[in-house]
Length: 504
Image (cartoon, rainbow, N blue to C red; front, side, top):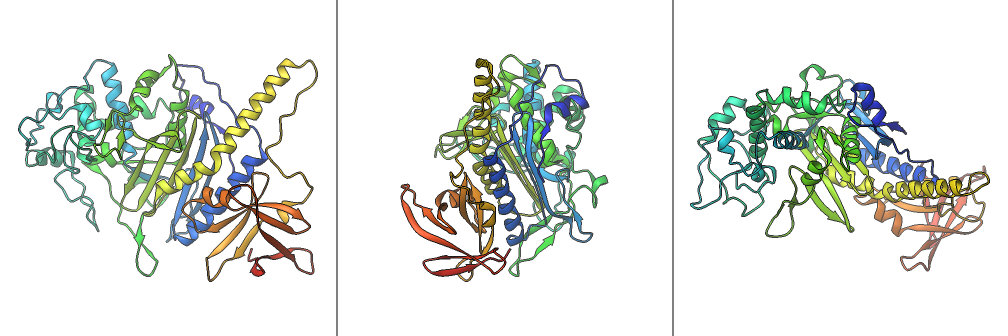
């Protein structure tokens, strides 16, 4: 499914925004269309090979959903198809909404990040194991550096029933727990910590956590398909059924329905691909002196590194995960709850975000970053070309000035003839021939790194039905000779004389 939606317009139609928003629409681009087609081909294959019942995904640039898709079934027993509005548990992505709530209250003067948690939660009597340790502070719980144990004193990740505690049970259990490390000595991801942050929100606002988040974040952003607790009323309908990790025979068993209850501030939310896209777009338009839900400088503060683990392998902002890949900074969060995996990846400089959601236990980060790596260059090229063309048009006295091409081939060969899927057995499962950056490329399926696959296996046309692989140094590699059947359609290709027949 291809979509192009102005999220700013969608949000404005839901609730009046305090600042004017201009949507920057990504212009039409052959390179981007080809990249999105590669994403579709990759996800379709991965869904089949990993036996993922359903997945939903989206790509965002600034205020626009450039693309979204949904594959598979939300419920195997009914065969109901997934859509980009299918609800999934987003589990730990919930922590971002809790962190935003804390920072709202900080900006209103209701708390200080240096405050000990016990200042606002008198019942927080968790034992400090280490004499001389700094106190457990609000900043410590937002950065997972407070030395807290990972979980509340309850076995809620244990199947088959996943007995999440009530809020009262969380509070009662704290007195019997103790710190794992001295504060600020190590990174220890903690669902207990963000649960405590949600309790601070309730204590300082005078509202229930759920009412606060709905009134102060979800409604103002028009996130009408996001819930701070998994909505039982949508079970069996819009809420996808969760399925577990593969068994030895390759099947995925249905996971029992659960609600996070007292752990909701850390892991309770449910949302859709389009609503998480809306959440990303809010962050892209919140810049300079703007204020919408948060002040822009507060969001910047949250997305800067506030804690680095001594091993230098984990970096955390205030609620946000922060990491560097290929000289780019990414922020966001992942989610993993019984039967669901999700990931929100945000690249603030280029204003590009990807969303991935599945109702099965899969590597959601691999998918969200895999989508980003396939589309980012094409989005940047399309927007840069459009800006250049508009600048030239404004300066010129004549008609519109065409932008330069996006690297297509110079001959008139119809690349669509060769696009398809070819048998890779027994050496591999299958190979897709795809259009990529103006020519063709091989995409072996399944793969955990599709961008690397196509960039290392680019093909250039030579003559007739003969292409050759372009080596990483730019020189010519082996020939790829396509064959045609009696009706003129491509039936396979040969490399080093060996045939790979076309299967679709």
